[in-house]
Image (cartoon, rainbow, N blue to C red; front, side, top):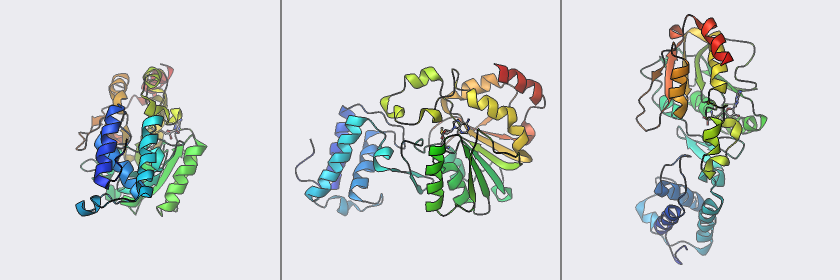
Length: 304
Ligand SMILES: C[S@@+](CC[C@H](N)C(=O)[O-])C[C@H]1O[C@@H](n2cnc3c(N)ncnc32)[C@H](O)[C@@H]1O
């Protein structure tokens, strides 16, 4: 139960306690009960994340308390990710609209955008970017915002996801530089890109079936990729040479499927990035490092 008279600080502590008791699963922007409580309580009260300590001690009206309680209750009873309850999520410092049509943005590719892809590539030389499997458009749009000289193409196979992505691009003022394509992995015709970013579906079916309830609210199309998680990745790697400029780079988020990927593609010298803010599975690969025997390798792997 929530306290009868409270300030924001008390409501955060109360929500945290109840989230712990309910044994919720995190991983959609936060990784613990306290941060999840802050995210929801601050949203309900319209507080900025840098709100002063003094403001957090102010008594709240019954209306404000009811708004917080509704969100806390919904988070527990529905086990929906907090971002779907608030309709927003932050990525690279920008607020994105999200709902069940798209995955909740959380890819560690955001960390590379924030650090300008150093030390891997010279972002000042990059002109054309492709974001494969764009979902909410978070990676494509954050890239366009961080590097105002680039033009981004972004693909997704889900028309519903692209509706959200287009709304985000318009809201964040980059609709003229981020172009969305409803297509299977790559846009047509093939054009050389200086940078290809991809956070494709990579969860093996059996792992998806065992995921906690929170993940079942996300579109399965954004997560599941066949029995070994490599269904989309095999096709992506099979054709990526056609789309990379000779000096281009491929940056992928393959999460927990990275070991299976490295095993299935032993000739591909992926460099695995050590992430400062946690997470796993981010690789970078220069076009010049692509295996020379690509045709034979790809044909065999496509048949696997
Ligand atoms: C893991 S989500 C990533 C979304 C977004 N890039 C992010 O980081 O939050 C994968 C996305 O891939 C899309 N997708 C699935 N299969 C695809 C395919 N064959 N071609 C293009 N997009 C695909 C899904 O609709 C989903 O939006």
